[in-house]
Image 1 (cartoon, rainbow, N blue to C red):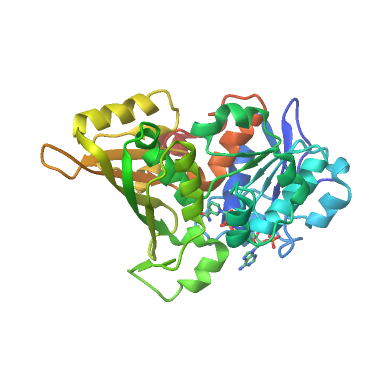
Image 2 (image 1 turned 135 degrees about the horizontal axis):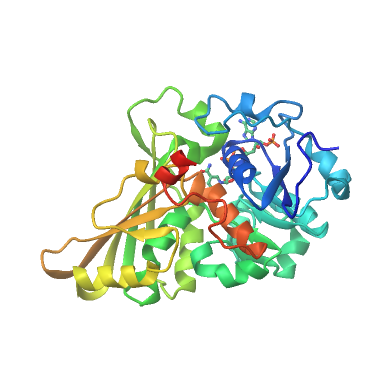
Length: 361
Ligand SMILES: NC(=O)c1ccc[n+]([C@@H]2O[C@H](COP(=O)([O-])OP(=O)(O)OC[C@H]3O[C@@H](n4cnc5c(N)ncnc54)[C@H](OP(=O)(O)O)[C@@H]3O)[C@@H](O)[C@H]2O)c1
């Protein structure tokens, strides 16, 4: 018997595995979603606790949602008793992949927020995420990479979606129009994230650091091969330099400068038109006329970007500034955007398009 209310009408029953930041955001979105029902939240470390109490000092909004957390073994041992339709898995990498495989084998549509299923090349995957655990799932090719704007047709049919990392979401959306046109010679991505990007562990790591911007991952970051994989899929094989930083006083939010050298000269208008055309029909991507702020996309599924020319009139140096909320478009709201498509729903269902709408709702 679920510790939550039983489902009503046609609502699909969704399980959330994990109890960290992305699980809290996902729980809130699913709770307010018109077509999904939050059936259960499961955690190894916090089973028996109330999620809204546990998460009350995280600056993640779980406004009094009275969820008592289950142990995942209760789901894995008898998945049918929960009458689940779908699951969002918010574990780390290999364990997320393994849990996703088990849930898919039990007939659920699954979105895995960890990195274990994202990289298509087995050697690269092993280098960054260790030896495969979900071997049957990976061999089956049932997994679709979940950057919605690039793979929506495939996502509609997918049984398992590998939700993208937060940096790759912002980077690939910010570079896709240029990559698709074969215009990129090289790119350097200066990326800045709030501390929630490092999950619960990040709280401890940065608790004594105030008012600072800390560069990390100088020896390599697992999001670099993911960015390279998706740019290559769009036809861009030029070198990518990726430089991630943490802004220690920001909890959630992500801002990137994608500094691009084009392989030919262009006017700024031409490049801006390319971006406007690429994203005109996208419900959650906006090309804006002034540099966007992280605050303006906080707690939304929006990705905003701004194209600037670094040359006075015409040249080949451009910078694309991109902002998202790492816990929303970079993780949980994009996961729901994908889950919507997997269930034949409009992808906007249950997702506020703006901060204003969110406050009003
Ligand atoms: N944070 C982001 O911005 C972001 C963006 C995109 C993707 N992701 C990926 O999504 C997955 C979930 O991210 P997250 O930020 O929600 O991770 P998280 O806060 O670290 O929590 C994920 C799970 O890991 C376990 N865990 C890890 N560290 C813990 C700690 N110190 N104390 C207690 N439990 C701990 C818990 O499992 P149990 O509940 O079972 O004990 C928890 O549910 C990860 O694979 C991450 O790489 C994160």
